Length: 247
Image 1 (cartoon, rainbow, N blue to C red):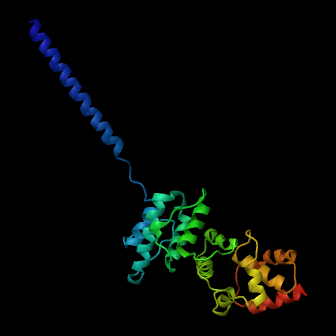
Image 2 (image 1 turned 180 degrees about the vertical axis):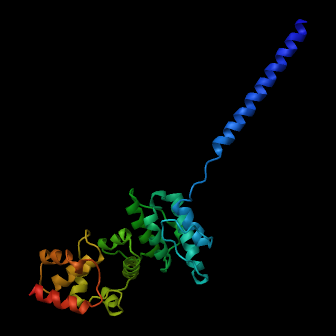
């Protein structure tokens, strides 16, 4: 009888152990199953770049990749992959339009060789511009383009950055319309000497005012008006206004 009782106890213990293991597996499985969540911004961008339909209610601007944009989309995907490995904090939704615009420019180095420099996301993005676009040093204020959130100023700012970083002169950029303001040779030289705290349009306005004989105080005042917000459709009129105030 004692032997039979011990056998039953062992069997009950084995069944209890098996039941406990089963419950543990079910608990782990339940924990692994999460409620449906909307995809994050990075996933949405990757899907859009690969041509996968994305939710219309996502609050992020995604590019419409046409067949002609395939190479550009692949460059952005390579850039995102490198950033995920080396500089995850730069993958902010506000910066995705920077990546898309950047991919539309000729690169002088492969993104796979990019080694981010600096600690802050902003400094890492600046090192990305240097790596992909830079052959020569550029004025520090041009790095403010990484803070731009509007498509057109971003496109213009990066185009000017790339041109100067690859040896084009400011005078040539004025002639071909990249810089729409009518800068003289002296103004172009002053443009390259502007302070790091300015943005692109601020540097242009300071160069214009100083080239006309005005001082930095006047230039700062001009930058506090609508003329400091961006280039206008009639830069010749802006020039006349600046001539008046500088006089």
